[in-house]
Length: 111
Length: 117
Image 1: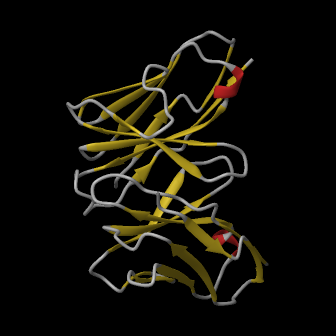
Image 2: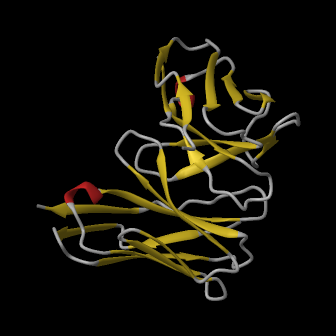
């Protein structure tokens, strides 16, 4: 079974800082990997989807990279804003089906 | 685009009651839908995967007779928690995807908080 670890578990930064969230997974035979954010008591919002053949994806201030062979992905957030405060989850996906989630990184951006 | 609506958002009911949760894709056809459960301060745990028109595939440890999943159309899946007990209290989240293989991203509903008294 896929094990997903996200480091750090919690992060607090002043507004405007660039930051990196790390995700590692044990089974490198993934089909894709998706990054999400979850606000308290809410569902998940999809941020970026990287296919296994890709190395990175960018959307606005977000950039996600994938090193499938080493079982790692990073999410880079540029010029952080208070509205970025949320829990960030990475989910490596197997073909067709299972997404396994870690416990996420709880981000607080201080104004 | 890619909106997933989940209803109800909050349910409180007595032990022994059956509860139905709906998950709808509003602006795309959801070939595949997923149901997750999330306990406080824990991550999402996949319960089952359903492809439209097929029986759901349940994860190990999830009782298929207790958690009934129906995915009869390309825009609707339902999860029925039968004879719910306090230990079933949790946050249930559905997601939907427009393909079966995984080339498209999953889009999540806002979740249903289920409290069994």
